[in-house]
Length: 179
Image 1 (tube, rainbow, N blue to C red):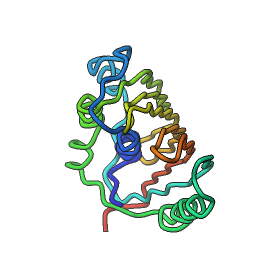
Image 2: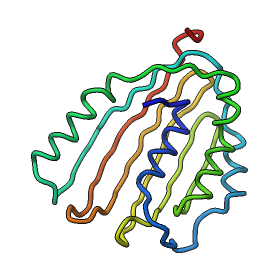
Image 3: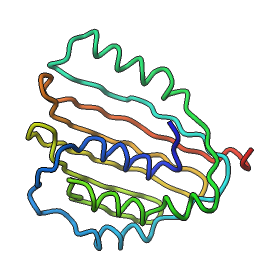
């Protein structure tokens, strides 16, 4: 898993919760409104970063216990250990807020809320799910030039499983110059 910074990673996770090409309700924020807020995001400092993903909660009432345990082991294993990556100045420029807004605009998701206040970010999305369900994602966290922490709550309708609820924390910290 190669990530550039927590917010683009979070956006990728949010978009992964979306599926199909179905229309949502049309009540979301416009790409321009999201871009306006995203413009206030801090620009990450180039360097070597380490990102970890921690599964805080996982509930899937319709999923067999063995599948739940397997999912929890995935998070407890490789994702929790984290990965490191080099963010160049070019990476920071091309994977920043503008790219995130472009990705959101091209998805089948509606951004219901997107607020940036200083280093704090709060977002909420609703996406058309596979098979006609609706997926919702809430994200809240803090970003600085050298670190970020995002907590995401996701509720997703999956065929043959039902509602899956996950809460995870994504941490990214600059650990030095690129190796």
